[in-house]
Image (tube, rainbow, N blue to C red; front, top):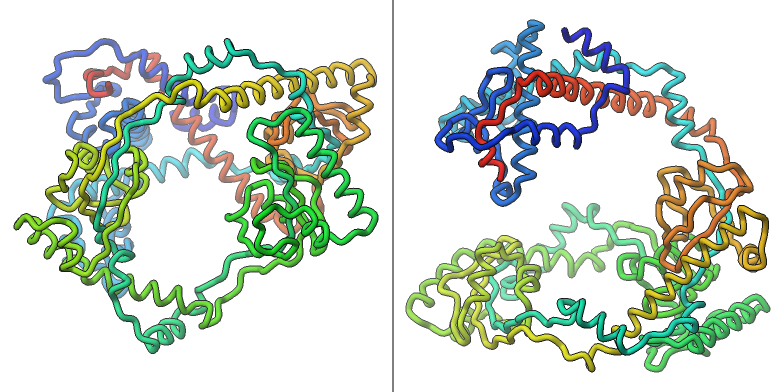
Length: 615
C-alpha cells in the first residue's frame, strides 16, 4: 500500500491543503458524547486516550482551542503512520532505541552514557520517554521511505535556481499623499462621528503608581565590588568574543513637518528641500548647509554624529546602508519630517579593546556576583515583611534602591517587569498604600516587592482635547485615498497610452537596483507584491497595481529582467541540490500525511468521542 502512496505523492495535484483538512477533521467530529469517556478519538478503531492527549498539550493550550485541535490532529496523523508502518512491516528494534538514548548528550558524562544520570533526569519513570523515542525513530523511518522519490533531477534543481535568482529592474514613481492635502476638507460632523465611533482610542485606561524594590542581578550589581584584576582576567579569557556594533557617522538635515500640516506647509518644505538639493548639485558643502538649516537647540550643527542602525528610524538606516562615503541621500520621509543625510564614515563590527570592554565586563561580573547573593537578600526581605517592616525601611536596611514606576497601565506593568498574569492581577488589585504580601516573580528571573502609591481610574478624553488629532488623522486618510485614486488613474492612462499626468510622473521616475522575486527593493519600503508582480509582465509594461509604501503609492513599470549568474550557480550548485531535495521530500511526506488522513476521514475511520475537550 505504501508503494502506491509513494507513487501518488509524486502527483502534486493530490495534495490537500492543510487548513482544508483540519476543517474537514473538525466537521467530521459529530456531537459531544458522555464526558466520562476515557477516549478522545478513535482512528481506524484504535483509541487516543484522554490522559495521553492531555499530557501532550502545552501549558499554553488551556484557553486556546486551536492549539488543542492542532495537537490532536498531530496525534491522529502519527497513529495513521504507525498503522501504515505495521501494514508494511516497518519496526524499530530495542537496540535502535537504546542506541538513540545512549547517544543523547544530556544523558552522558564525559562523553559516555551515564545510567544514574539518565534515571535522575527521568525521575525513575523512563517508560513514556522511551516510547516517544521509539515513535520518533519510527516516524523518521517512514519519512525516509516515503521520500525515496524525492531525488530531483539536475534539470529540476537548476530550474529552481534560475527561477529564484532571476532578477528584475523596474522604474517607479511615488504618488505622495502630501500633494493632495489641499484638496481635503474635514467637517465638524466628521470629527464628531469619528470620536463617537472610536471611543476606545481616546480612552485613557486605568493606571496605578507603585514604588518598588527589585531583586535582580542588575538591581543588586551596584553593591558588588569588582577588582581590576578580575576585569583583566575576564578579558584575557573571553575578550575576543566582545564585538562592537556597526555604526554610521553621518551629517543630517531635517525639515520638520507640523503635526497637522497645511498644503502650504508641505509646499514650503518641499521647495526648501529642492533648494538644498540644487545648492548641493552646484557644489555647496553639505556640512555648511547642515549648519544653515540646523534646528534650534542642536548642540553640534553640521557635525557628524555616530549612531547604530537600531538607533535610527528604519528609513534612515536603509538610506545610509545604500550610500558610499561622502554620498548624499535623496530626501527621506520619516515621522519627524523630510530628511537628507550624508554618510561620513562606517565603523564595522570589531573586537573591543580592553578599555572599551571595561565597563561591559565590570557590569557583567558585578551581576554575576549579585546573582549569588540574590537568594540571601530575598530571604532577608521576606523575613522583614513578615514582621511588618515598611518597604522603604527594608530597602534602607538592605542597602537597596527603591524605584517608582510612575502611572502605568496593567499592560505596561506586564511589559516593564515581565509579570505573568497572576502576578499582574496581584499587583493591580492592591489597595492604595498596601504592599504585596510576598515578592512577585518577574520575567528576568528576579523578584519585585511593590507598594501601590496612587490609582488613576479610566477616563475618556473630551472631544475638544483630541479634535485636532482627529482632524489630522482624517486629513491624512483622505489624502492617502486621493493618492491611491491618482495612482490607479495613472495605470489606466498607461494602458491606453500616455496621458498628461503619466508624463509628469514619468519624468521623475527612479530606477531600482536589481531584485529577486523573494527579495525587497533596495531603498524602497513597499508592498512585497510589487517584487512578485514585476516577474509577471514584459519589459516596458506597467505593473498591474498601485503598491502601498511608506511614502505613498508606487506605480512602476518593468525595465528589464536579468538571468541568474552562471558564476553564482557554480558556487551554490551543491547547496541548491540539497535544498531541492529537502523541499521535494517535505512535500512528498506532507502529501502522504494528507492522503492518509483524507482516506481515513472519507471512510469514517476518524471518530471524535470528546469534542468538549477541544473547546
